[in-house]
Image 1 (cartoon, rainbow, N blue to C red):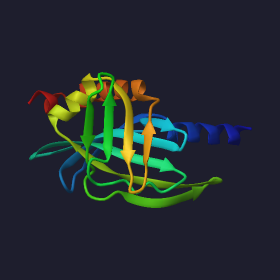
Image 2: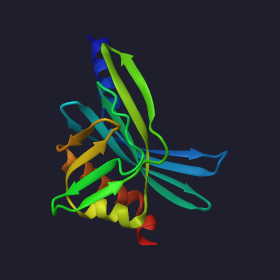
Image 3: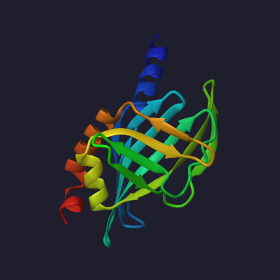
Image 4: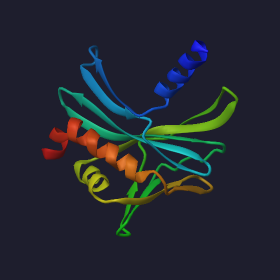
Length: 172
């Protein structure tokens, strides 16, 4: 019984929202990022984690996305993420490079994972923080996926992360 309880606790800790801070002494970088900040739809989950890289030369901010589902989406490079806001404005964001892709299997689950980064400037980040998101469309090579649930929590976490980690970036 204790063994099962330990396994459940480990699983819960791996699947729960976290903020991670890493120092890379060799490259003189600090990485601060979210883990497990996600929205969902019928096809799977989309993780939308804020990711900050700080160095001696400046700070860069990204959304680190991770799409987990049953079928390949082959996320497009240009205007691939379309955020629809409650006021019907649309924000089109492009990914940096090409999505990484792999087939994941284990624990009885087989699925597709596509992940990468989206660069954010100050204006774009402020829009994502200050306007309520209604939905997200992610464009693939043959079809798109829409995500409509979970944005209240995602944005609440983005705002908290930004207050504690991105003040200098947002105020300069």
